[in-house]
Length: 636
Image (cartoon, rainbow, N blue to C red; front, top):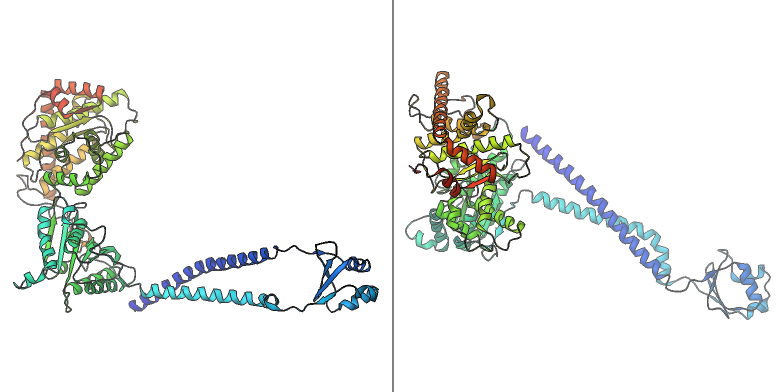
């Protein structure tokens, strides 16, 4: 019953869309035909004006001219008399009664016979194309108009039929090996391990006999996993470019339609095209849009997606062999994919693409600086040090922002200061120099940011302070920028504790300078960040002696991920109370640590505030010159 309802619903929607399309195009086509006929009529009418038009006169004038002997010739064409005068070049035209002959007309007006004998009279019957066109055209034009309308209607119906029949065809775009946009591994900077994994796939496509001789089978699928912007799509293009085989690309969302069965039909059509062009690569971007775990929906709305996924599973590893077709898919959510999709035999190989390290970032910067005039003093190594956590897409956007900034400043080349300023713009947002602040607000902002900077500078495990500013960016009234000297992959308890103290440094500075009753809303985001970090330390990282090495976390999985929907947390209310106490303890310790540092360096705090009020921004070298050398920063 449900399937019949869906078929009726499908037919209704298809008919409705056809009616709208037909009416819209019918009006357009009828208007077009009308305009064409109007132009033809205009051209024909213009042609009639090329000859001089005869003068229309009455019968009395003709009788008078005949009696006076001024008429040279008279031509009778039906009920029209065309008169040519002797001394006048212009002709005259007289209209007589329809069934009256010329001789009867002359007799009725009393013209003498001897007068008529001196005037040559010619009688012409209507014939030729003009006569028949004049006769048939009034009846032919409506018939032609009807035929034209029927012709356009037939074309539209055929177009709708073709679109209806092609509704289930794949919309995959094919990229040939000789395409101008061909990519190779040279175009992909960084990701060394990922490229090594994919080079084996390329070698198999180039020389399959070398592997089959050892009994090795070609991988049926390669799953690229990584954060957004790490270059998954670019790597897939590079694999196709290196192998020199056809490359079919499609997004996972293009399979899913409102009507059941369309996605599965598109999957079948896609693999049929790939088999004809084999060896070939099929790239499915964002496969998590269609490859989510089955059985997750609470209603019937997920049937189409699940049928599409089932068809992908069958095509990749079913009864029919899929020889010569490798499926490469990309996702940044591998945790939501169906287990049947991830098993060996379908996606045999999983390639994890990590965020680029400092060396990779330097290589990526070299790729994206091509075509941009850079100043000679620019150090890409320094830029790579200032951009930890940036993906390849972030770095490309960074250099583009720097180029735009250089153009805005009427420079002929991109300077290092433009790139450094663009880093802050990408991280925090554009500067807000037009924001009006009172002297008290500027001073409070300066003490807040100075509190962050001094706590981070004099705590052993905090990252070095790179810049301090009271110029607003984004939603922040000011900012303190601290970045590690090299990439950090693990964080210790001591590192987290010092980061908490630095985060609360601005709050403590306001409290120490202005008192408990004058705390502002400025530290709101700091308190949120500190609370979230302390919560993770207690609940996820096992950094609480009272709770021990166990993970206490809420069940954050959503219903559509096919996870449990009833148990929200895996701990009791008593444990929740202990968790709250432990979070409070960590925050209290961090606050005490920050207060201790700021009291010990109160003089440097005031000096930093004075410079900020004067210059608004302090770079790393100037900051160290003001406060002196800090504790050596150790990364464990």
